[in-house]
Image 1: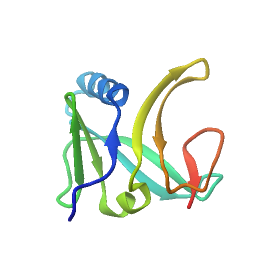
Image 2: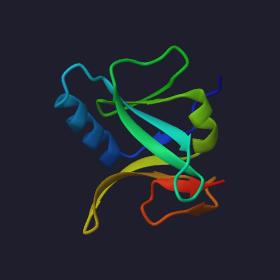
Image 3: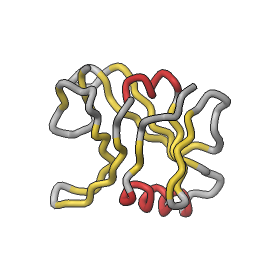
Image 4: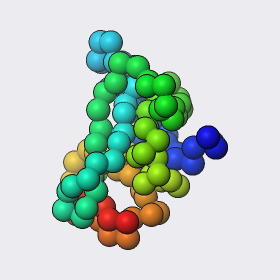
Length: 110
């Protein structure tokens, strides 16, 4: 498989590393795409013990992100970011493939 073209911002990497450090036995953040949500697809974030054999592994500044091959198709060219503003703290996916998204930032359409 070619090099994954999903990137991780420095803010996201720092937050992921901090979260993983506080969770015993967890090694990475798994990001996946599921059907559903108000715009058709939604992102799911889970802590993972280890990578699956077919996972794409992104590493930056002590953080590890796992993405399965099916989700990678929908996330190609995306940046995973962590935003901390007046609306709260959250991971956000800046996805150039999304033609529509919802206000919460976790649901999108292609």
